[in-house]
Length: 178
Image 1 (cartoon, one colour):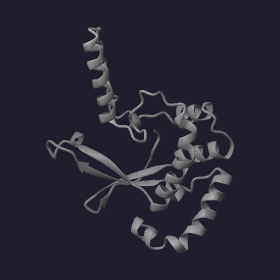
Image 2 (tube, one colour):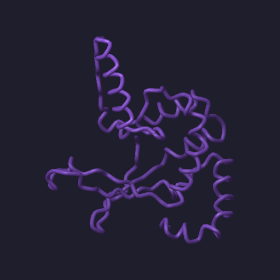
Image 3 (spheres, helix red, strand yellow):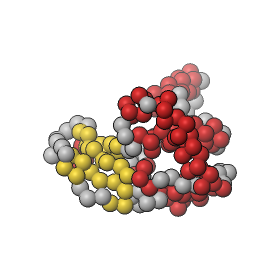
Image 4 (cartoon, helix red, strand yellow):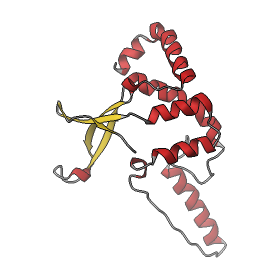
């Protein structure tokens, strides 16, 4: 289903989806049919003949994205307190720009006070492409997610598949392991 379909039928589908989503949470299950992603490569810059110049965009089921958003809205307030203040990536109302503004302010304060300034910036290239699922689940459990919701997360990251789609041509599906 496409997102525009959901938007145009939300009054009709709202209650049935509410029942389905609640049943999924109560059973600790994320439906396998929603775990498949079509990967569409989008060119960033540089040579179009170089695979490294493409960004993989995952196209997921509209139901999957809606359920993910609902879970995010439920879980984020609980885990937000575990994030350090210096975390800017993937945090609401923060970005690399907010990080840069805070850093620049700190830099100028130290220059004005004639303090030594040591800075190290790192970029974990494709860090989220390589997350170990067992480690992720142990961190989720360590931070207080238990019971049905933990089982839901386990279900969410297992049995995921993806295939590449380019100009109507599709690769075979493969299992996602990290």
